[in-house]
Amino acid sequence: MRTIDDLGDVRGRRVLVRSDLNVPIQDGVIGDDGRIRASVPTIAELAGKGARVVVCAHLGRPKGKPQPEFSLRPVAARLGELLGHEVRFASDTVGESARETVSALADGDVALLENLRFNTGETSKDDAERGAFADALAALADLYVGDGFGAVHRKHASVYDVPSRLPHAAGGLIAAEVGVLKQLTEAPRRPYVVALGGAKVSDKLGVIANLLGKVDRLVIGGGMAYTFLKAQGHEVGRSLLQEDQLDQVRGFIDEAAKRDVELVLPVDVLAATEFAPDAPHEVVDATAIPADREGLDIGPRTRELFAGRLADAATVFWNGPMGVFEFDAFAGGTRAVAEALIASEAFTVVGGGDSAAAVRKLGLPEDGFSHISTGGGASLEYLEGKTLPGLAALED
Ligand code: ADP
Ligand code: MG
Picture (cartoon, rainbow, N blue to C red):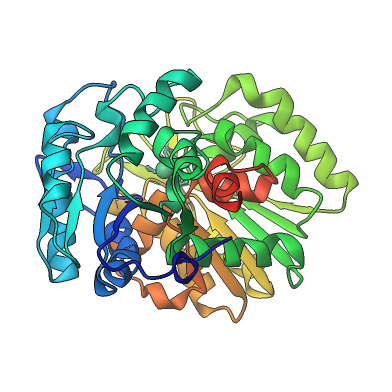
């Protein structure tokens, strides 16, 4: 993969940078700004070299048309604060505002285009529609730098189609992320333990299937654990459950046994009366969840069990919170796993937007981990062994 240095002298050149600035925003206020901060070094490097930097990114899932609640405008302000340099904001993606904003840039200036997903061409499955949008984006710049790791698993115009239209390189963030994931996939030091949690089993089934042939131990918590408990024949009450995935999960349990992969599941949970921050709750055995309760976190015995099964690892990949960490009462399991990783001497990688946000929300030191990835889906698909469109496009 070419790096920014391979682009030669960028002074005075318009460089389109695809960043991942997809941060939580409520009522115009940015929550966790980790992805913005992770995007700063590449933008600052290019601006420092005198490039005219045109940053583009998406936010949330607008339906291919402008929707004010998905505007990147607050992100432009935050990015400017972090860069220590004003970021000009274009109020459209490839229209008049974008063209005027870009042509007004001086060497070393930075602009941010409005949310790419305000244009249907960005995510279209139709190559021609995506290509037309990519043409318009490419016309705004002389060079392209791909740095939005969190979006490289998407075959989207700004990620996949623009690089083939401009001389291109990978930014520092993508280079760093790929370097870490290579260490996990090529020759991980053993024991290699993967801890999975979070809400969407279906998103993570592919990675489980692939990891069964690679890891020594699989620790499963969070919302996905209940589908595993149910697959083992236990009642899970009103806990998160993916009924349609039960057969596949049963297959994984058998496969893990065959391959001698240790599968570590919760032994107790915090069973709550409802999904709410102040819901009354009690510790119950994972095999005896009352029918009218839902498990919102792993219990105290499970925290100890998981910490113990992480302590002797040489390599750990952790994706997905162990409970509903957004509610303080149900953040203890996620904290316990994060603290076990921080205490460990292992090569520790955290992947997943919510997992990374949890680390910061709990006030834990980010440098306590070897690496915190900015990409959840992207890092999982990489570990699955899939070809990621945004990385393939940068290779060519
Ligand atoms: P990541 O972004 O790190 O990949 P996911 O998006 O898969 O993680 O899942 C994160 C979400 O999972 C969080 O919002 C958290 O509240 C939720 N979650 C974790 N445990 C549970 C649970 N027991 N019940 C319901 N939701 C859960
Ligand atoms: Mg998530």
